[in-house]
Image (cartoon, rainbow over all chains, first blue to last red; front, top):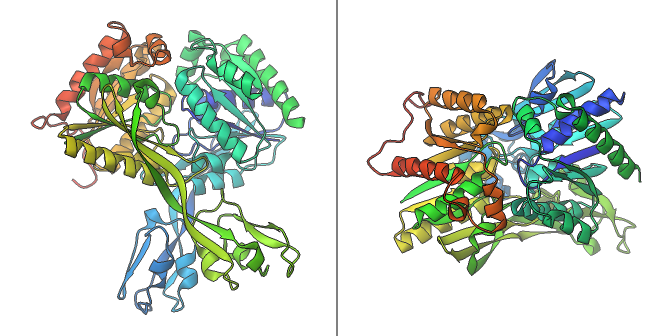
Length: 282
Length: 311
């Protein structure tokens, strides 16, 4: 079972929900994999505290040009949609940060001047975290594109009964890459106008991908009731409403799992796990 | 003309709430919401849209079923898993190939190499942007299409429109609400900006993410200042964060206390400095004054303690 935890708005509690679910699932004896796909700013490790045993570079494909072989036909520049390779006379310039790795320029090169090469975009780290199998990606600073690294994190996921994908905030391509192939998406939101606005966008996104989904309202007593009403009118299941408790926020600030800091929260996450697996199996 | 960009690294630290208050305090700025895939600033600024433009962030491929010879070349070449062999038959072949428009990266390789020339490949409208009037000045904002790419390009479009507006109207400041993370929309928001204000929270997550966003600002050589929002949630970590920022040559613009007034203001569609005179509104005013001073032409807001890669 693969469950993605996403949101729309940042800071609603995705990592809180994802790490605590992973923790209680492992405690219940399930084999669990946790994937931190927020490769720009991964925080799961702060709470799960993995022993990193694997740490390797992740690369994407970029062109490498041998100017001696170049005939100046210009086809590489013509096929490229991203201005990542530019051809003027026999001068070919490449801009690796813009490259999407589509292979067009080296496929089209009849002179064999342009070939596939590799460029590091980030690192992949993995190891055990108590009973949880932990994998995270860390995007190199200055890299614009995270989807290739997110793909690598997902590809490196060890088999488990439950795989939890901790997603980045937003609704654009990094999130799409992270949630693709999930059995279920859990949207974590906060009951504020900003939270609701972004939840609507996230709901449209998961609907476009035709993935089953439900909502968790975090810090459920901090705002208004518009979010609950929206879910009700739209027929969206609210799987849990987590209260806003300062002591738990303080524990979070210190890197503690809520399920370890509070038995009430532990029960809450155990209950959410049960509800979630029930929803997915349905 | 100066550009101030508010970013965070970690999501949910309070960028938009703070930008809304800055808009009220600045009075003469152009505002730009560059969090294009989850824009919220308009919710507290009550914008009246004056102009609307389509945005095309890239191209998409579409296989013409009737012309598909089912040779499979597209599937062989596509690096993005966007081709599926599940299209309807066309009288010549029982099954054809089909492009998944969400997975399609718009690279054009399938169109270029299709022997039957069966692939349509062209620009797609995948967003829109707006020029609006608000009670605090003009706002440029946008909406990226669901599951669309090219958020960086839309951010650049919004920024360029905001700069142009500032020049046309003789306004000296553009205030940009950025997005979380350190990827392409953030990079597109900050390159060439006058000053970046990093808003963070007093948590280990906030601290971890702050280091990376400082690295990003350094990488692009943009001067940066720091504000710890909701600081009283963990005063010890707030101190540690300010200390780490100073060590890295980042000026501290101030700290803002946790205050439920921020949410109440948001529910009333106001910035917190408009909603209440006290509490965190006082803190936000102080932060604004320090940021404003750092933006003045004769003040150097360049970091002192850390050398950039080029020096």
